[in-house]
Every structure is written in structure tokens, then in C-alpha cells.
Length: 397
Image (cartoon, rainbow, N blue to C red; front, side, top):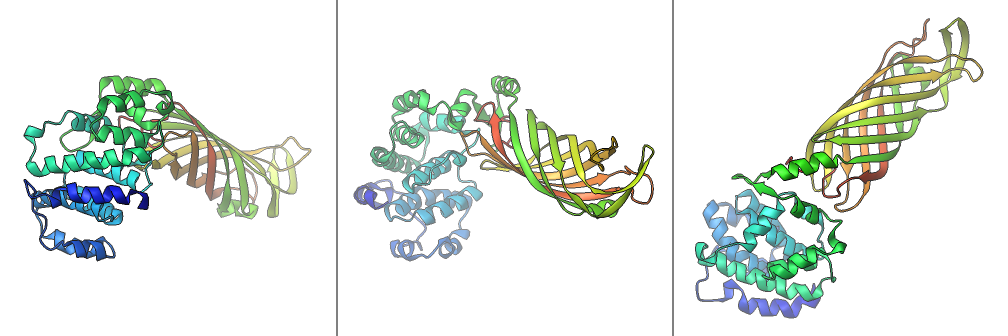
């Protein structure tokens, strides 16, 4: 950020807080010395909590530029969270978050979601005559801020696009976004499949977006490894390592998975096999699980989704190497999982925890029934539109 010091000095002079004409007064207790010396946002919060929502918005028009000119991105990001919680306005907050992240070298596409096209339009088609003087001063400052950030951005990058857009160079920004190097980004997907923003700030897909999502139906393939901890009668098998694969097909807000897992090794103690006319002891536990899982995301945040699912499948054991005997049963399970995918990238990571229930599969005293807990880690690739978050289709919010 030190390379931007000359720019900050210019902005000090041009910021709304430094202008006498039309500036909106700030919260009186927030002096420059306090903003410079505050160890964190907790030092400012008590002075802001007493403000009404309208007063927080008025304060934001001058406080945001002051935090930028005083070189306090840490306080700025925390204030934006506070402002957002108080209902300050979606477009100015998002615009500030994006420019602040670019300024701080922390930009990535998790800053926005499928609702961004409507907010970009709100900026480009704003009517200054319909805005307050404080808001217009804020917009002029942020446009200058974006203009000063622009020369420091990588050519052809998303930060360059946002600096062009927010410095009121909309045509140049649109031309850059249409370039091939930005075709594989979430922003390009969202702009090509625009959503509307309802009165409460929720993203709502239009008909064209719904059809595009239905046509896309993204899928993924992961290689998995994990651990299996049996309970009940099957606990005699002992803990085992899982290896396998997982194919997933997204179907709107839902998903369907086909897992294949292998558990190899020996049991903790021999067990009596009494099946298909064979009665003998074995300590082999070469097991295969082939199932079907279905579920849906229950929450998503910045490329990470929390998912719930249920599964049912074949669970078979080969107790002997040279005998044609299989001990098979149904495996029913419930699970929670996490999926993480970097915006605009195909690699996908997964983590699943399952509770399994196993029916009887062997006659005699060792039924090998019971249950298990299992942990499954996966890594692989996702196929389909990169703009669709791993935890939800674009029509969901």
C-alpha cells in the first residue's frame, strides 16, 4: 500500500471530509487522531451504536473516504460490515468492498455473488439529481479512488475491470469484460445470466437464467480417501481406511451422487462365516460399498457450501480369497458435507461425515450388523459453468 501514498495525499485534499461545500457532517466523536490510533474497530463501535440507520448512512458518506485517506483498510472493512448490518445500501457497500480489496491486494471473486449485475447497473445508470449531496460527494471520491488504483492493476484482470467501471469508464470496462481472458470467471457468467435484486436485496433469476442453469447441470468427479469406524456387531472388523471415487450430478438445487468405496484389510479378531453352505473362520475384510446419495445444500458462503444428504447402497465383504462367498447387506446412511471451489476454477475439494446403518449379512453369532461413522475427503474437478457456486445453482440465494 505504500506505493499508493502519493495517491492518498491527493485524496486527502479531494475527499468530502476536506471540502467545505456540501459535505455531510460526520459522527462528532470520530476524530482523525482516534481513527489513526484505534487498535481495531471495537474502539469505534460504541460511538456508532447510538446512531440511527439513517445517521449511519450519512456518516458512511464521509467516514469511508476518511478511512481511505488515513490508510486504515482494517477499520474500513469492519465498518462496512457494521454498515451492512444496519442496512446501508447494497451497491455502495459492494463497490467499496471491491475497491478496498483491490487497494489491500486481497481481491477475489468471493466478494460478490449472482446478484452483482443488477448492482453494476445501479452504479452505471445512477441519477445524481436523485441522490443526496453527501452521496454524490462519496461517489465522486470513490471514482477518483478507482482512477488512482487503475495504473497499479494487472492488464486484462478483473481488478482492472472494476477500476475502469467505478472510475466511470463503462465502455472500456465492458470491452475488457468481453475479452477472452475473462471468459472463465464468475463475473462473466453472472453478467451473461443476469439476475434481478428484489426489495430485500435477494437475488432472483430471470427466465433466461433459469433455462441456462437447467441446461448446464454441472457435474464433478472426485477421488476420495477416508476412515471408517464400525459400531455394534461389525465392530470386530476394526477401523479401516477408505479409498474410492465419487461422481456427482447437480440437478438444480439438488444433487445426485454415485460413490464407490473399498475397505481392505483384516479384522481385529476372526469371525465365523456361516453362509451358502460354508462354515469357517476368517479374518479377511475386503469390503466394497456402491451406493446412491441424494441431497441439497443448506447454506453457502464465499465458495464454501454446507450440504445434507442421504444414501443407500450395496455393502459386500469377501471373507475368503478362494471361495465364491459374499456377505452382502444394505448400507443406509445420513451425512453432512462441505464443498469448496475457488471462483473461476475447476478444482473442487470435499469433506463428508456420515452415520451408517448396516443390516445383518451373516448367519450365526457374527452377524456383522450394526453401524459405522465414516469420514470422506475428496479432491477432483468440476465440469460445467464455472460461475455456478458449488453449493447452489444460480437461481438460489
